[in-house]
Length: 118
Image 1 (cartoon, rainbow, N blue to C red):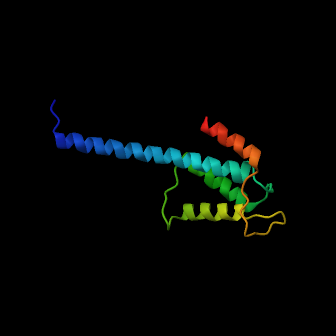
Image 2: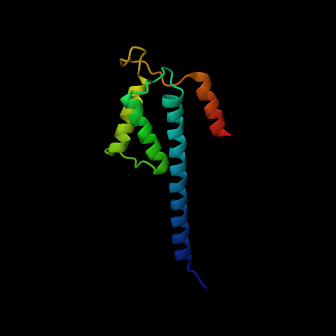
Image 3: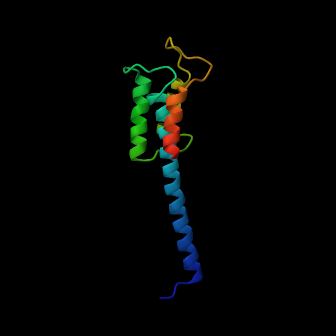
């Protein structure tokens, strides 16, 4: 069976694009897990169970682990994710928003990051 050089090149490019897409999906899942660890599992300021922003972020994260989020400026899931993350990183002890960014409690998050890297 003979395959032309042009066809071989076309197949190789297609396989590389598929591989790059899969790597991106895995990278996105790892990044989402870091956000979950820092903002939900080990936040600097503990979240109340009834916190609607935390609940929404948890839903987005679990959805993204099942199916990757499409990226883009005008993509609604990405905008909701960004909004939830920015709200939780600027949360203060009294429930108001601050200008400083606090998003994780050091030691528990660091341990989780080391586990993920291993």
